Length: 258
Ligand SMILES: NC(=O)c1ccc[n+]([C@@H]2O[C@H](COP(=O)([O-])OP(=O)(O)OC[C@H]3O[C@@H](n4cnc5c(N)ncnc54)[C@H](OP(=O)(O)O)[C@@H]3O)[C@@H](O)[C@H]2O)c1
Image (spheres, rainbow, N blue to C red):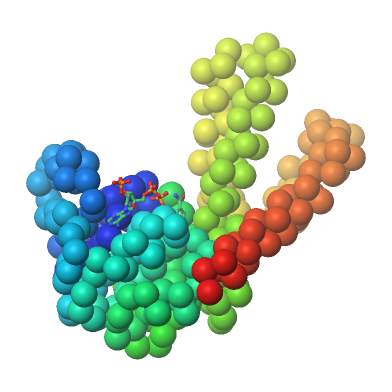
């Protein structure tokens, strides 16, 4: 795939653009020409831009759909023609809804996350075999991918990797607050937390969470004392329920979009 059109110019679209701009020619399609021009400037003219209008042709194009789920109905009324492959990153919008709104030869639901901007997204994919090869090629450019077996699993992935950065941000913020509470300067505390997360990504890539915990926790040590407080406050159960709630919401949104 040499060229792609991205419909939407918001946070996720930008994250994906930064990830693929080196290798793929990009057209960004949006509704606000000033925002599109600012984006083109920010990217040193390396994208083309198009303002959407009634009868906007998607004929034969590869499309990444990156508008909000609630924008889909309006947007689809403006499009004409049949796209080649359509890659939708819309949370909680099932393939059936996308297929009835926008015509394409092949459809994929992709659930990336904001880390795409640094080429380190974890992206879940599900959809038509005919488009899967190109989906893997495309989303591999913005990080890791996992191909899932059914659409239900995309809702679960949405909770873990789509929403995940916000959940981890809460942990990061709370740990930095803990450092400040104990007397560290805010900037130093935040620097420590950032370093922790950076290093941890390699640790968790190469070890199980169980191994990491056991390697760090020594008898009657600081980790064992801190860890038992996490357990007594139900942090483990809270996180399981956090995923439960997010999955439930993704399914509600999926049902709304039928
Ligand atoms: N943010 C994340 O971390 C994340 C993670 C995974 C998946 N997603 C999914 O990614 C999608 C986009 O999320 P976001 O965070 O990027 O939202 P966002 O920042 O609000 O961006 C949405 C973009 O869609 C544009 N748009 C709306 N209607 C349009 C139309 N008719 N034609 C062309 N462009 C139109 C908006 O234009 P204006 O700028 O003119 O309003 C805006 O640029 C969502 O469906 C979300 O579920 C997001």
